[in-house]
Length: 70
Image (cartoon, rainbow, N blue to C red):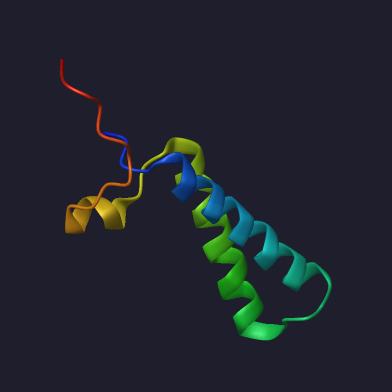
């Protein structure tokens, strides 16, 4: 797997995962929506840790900085 996520993208995903978890554990969101948010949060954390997003790969998107050529 070639990395396709930049650091800003990873930070945003981690923040969203924390917000989703907070909404769930405080009881602000319940039911099916809560479980969907938890699933998205888990996916966001996992993709941030491995720096690879399968959806980005499918559409040919990359937020990694391009290394300079010398």
